[in-house]
Image (cartoon, rainbow, N blue to C red; front, side, top):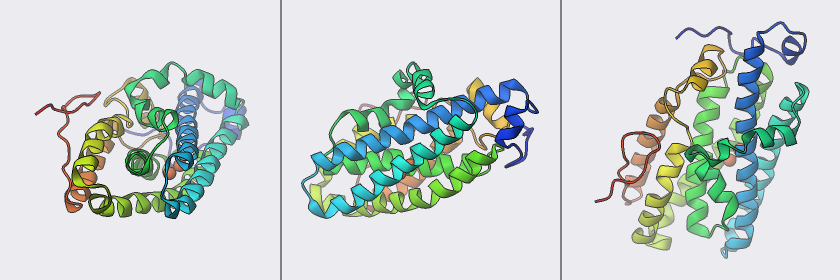
Length: 252
Ligand SMILES: [Fe+2]
Ligand SMILES: [Fe+2]
């Protein structure tokens, strides 16, 4: 599929002054609203985790991640505001979408207080996936403000990802393989579904407009390949997933 706009080709003024087709703005606003709420729910999850964890050594990292996720959300809401969509309006538009399987991971993190294992799972499900979505898709966005925000977010998400993989390596020793394997079975389907359904009309529009570079299915594949290696290196078991979206566990 050929993309219509090059990376960074569109600025807010192009939308405001009507130099871009109206459908572009519609697709962009939906994409940004989804990105913003995902950052916001992740921040809420980190906030809750501060109450749920007992390991004091983790606090500085959680506080750092919390501050950064809040900043990521703020950055994206500012971009929306610039083109006339308020935070409240953006969040309201997401209410029906948030019930879908693609939002189960951030919703779960924001709704339940995480202990140490759940925090690791949430970080694998939200920070590692976020790193891919932002690094692969948004870094080359045709919408210049989103591209610039992605550059800032990416640097911090790389550190969140490093935290998650470090924690994963030690998880077997700290919590026991059985407990972590059970958590992986619970969380990995949610994490993979976070990329959204493959081949949707919405993603087709995003790719055509240069707002995303890859289909959700390709990103989900990349994620699973990456995670599989790390999970087995940590002496853990990668759960088997059903082939089609929304993915669930294959019962043995
Ligand atoms: Fe983030
Ligand atoms: Fe993050």
